[in-house]
Length: 218
Ligand code: DC
Image (cartoon, rainbow, N blue to C red; front, top):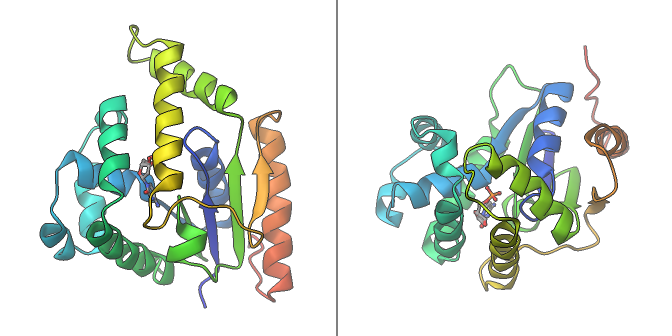
């Protein structure tokens, strides 16, 4: 069984930052599943077109789109809307499982982050983290990031967009974002990146040790 870390949580919670740092710390492959959903939305891929792709082919398509273009508020809103579609989610789940079970020979395991990784995609992942933060803190983080590329953005706009997306992602009928007790809950509101990271590394090490999996660095 491939060692897998499943991370879920709302936008701006710091889950992407934690996932990237964990991946490089443990030598795991990382899949940002939100980026895959954004790619489907940006390219307006139909379920039929998507069903013909492998996860590598979809990643290649994602790479051909500038990152900033994938992360605009407009694309975020469309992504959240298309990700409600059952037929899209089914294919995406299959592609993400393909990644989780075959992360590549040079990696010791896989880390996936998104909204339904620990509930639907890899429910038996050894380590499941639900990373969150207060809406206001998340909006402040997102606003700082957006300001670099969009001087016209306002805090209120960013706050309202996140709130609408939280609502859409957690109330949809198909695979909603949902915390349950199989996850470790990590609230990053009052922590620095370093503090959250050290806490999470310990949680992951304990989870893998308990499962009898050796993921220590060589
Ligand atoms: O993680 P993100 O903010 O880049 O994700 C963008 C949108 O994609 C998010 O609002 C909901 C959707 N998404 C999803 O439904 N399931 C996932 N596993 C990942 C993202």
